Length: 296
Figure 1 (tube, one colour):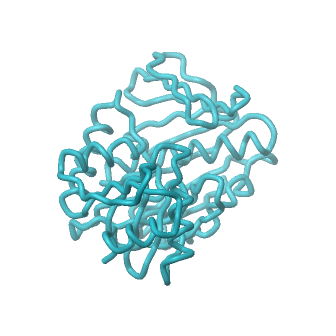
Figure 2 (figure 1 turned 180 degrees about the horizontal axis):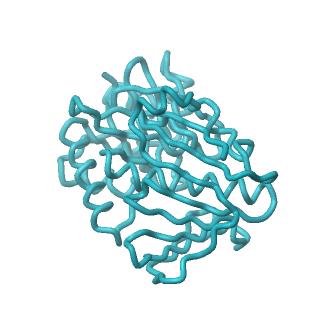
Figure 3 (figure 1 turned 60 degrees about the horizontal axis):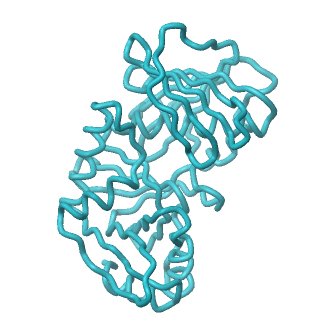
């Protein structure tokens, strides 16, 4: 067994490979910046263990509860008799890339990979992202679909519907706002720490932009991007803030424990952090208007 340890969002993950000439950490190059040694990992907060074993077979006693499109392919979700879950992760061509079984609040996970190296990399990466998101719900942790700017000690995620222009807006910040850096371009992590404050972290999941930074910042604001004919920004009241942030978080609405944990974490974020809607054009003035309103 080949054990590999990582710290992501101040939480520890272990990926263990049963001996194989097809499966190794070469499948997950984006995890390299998050690697830690076993001694440090054992002293940390272990979130989950993923065992990669191609001899794993589908559970017999299961019920299909959901099929959803990730944008990169379909994932089938089955509820197991012991309360765990089984997932079949497919790529955009409909090919089965990964069988994933998660038990004990997603802390104990196993997966079997299939196909060539590209399929295996896709399947394992999606399995890790899924397991992290749902295990993290038990640790006041949110995996958010957002493009994120880091400016000084603060982080500013921008959410939006796909294709609206999150990455365009953050690129304008980097062009126009001195000191603005890209933290993550697709899936940053927001976590409520023991001091009761929300922090934002880089992650190994960054969409099409290879921005895999092991960094941490205080959460300054969350801003939803909406296209408009002129630039303006509004701070949202609590109910609207909740409705704006919740859809951007990875969730399982059909699992009451995970979904309630998610809602609790979102509530704590909006209690401590301003939530905005930025109505904007894809221009430099939009970045300046937004920065003037939300930066700390």
